[in-house]
Structures are given as C-alpha cells and as structure tokens.
Image (cartoon, rainbow, N blue to C red; front, side):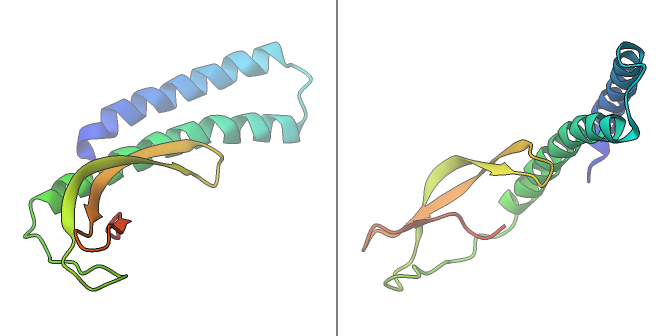
Length: 117
C-alpha cells in the first residue's frame, strides 16, 4: 500500500541524517539529551508525512468501495455527502497532519459528521 511514497520517505530520511550531521557539527558539546531531542523533532516530521500518505491511500481505497448508508446520530435520517473537508490533527510528536475526508450532512436536522476512519 505505501510503496509509492517509499522513495520520498527514503529521501526525507537521508535529509534527516545529513541534517543531524550538520547539527552535530554545529553543536560539538551537545549532551545526549539535546541530541535525543533534536533527533526526535526531526523524526516526528518524517512520521507525520508518512501518516498523511497512508491516510490518503486508505481514503482512495475506501472511495472505490460501495457506499454504506449512514444514519444521522441525532434524528436517524439518511446522511448525504457534502464534499470533502480538511481536518488537521496533532501527532504525539507534536507535528500537524492534514487529512481530507468526506463530510456528511443530515438533510432533516442539519447535523454534520466525518464518517469514522
């Protein structure tokens, strides 16, 4: 599933490694904890990009599946698609991940939801 983005991630990993080498050269007296924090910060960026790519691929696969009728959690009416919306989420590493998913709205009561996923 994630093969398409592998070369992109390998490139980013290489950039992280070279960036860390540069950082280490600029901080020759860095403590172990400082090196760890800097490494984790840079790895969190890679993690966020990988997560975005995986979610995009999963959404593309879901778009090919038959549409399940969802009922409004408020009034029970059939929900209708209302396009796609972006949603920003925070990773545990403090990075922002933007995902785009279908949004549903109830024609009866106006409630709107992002379907689970």
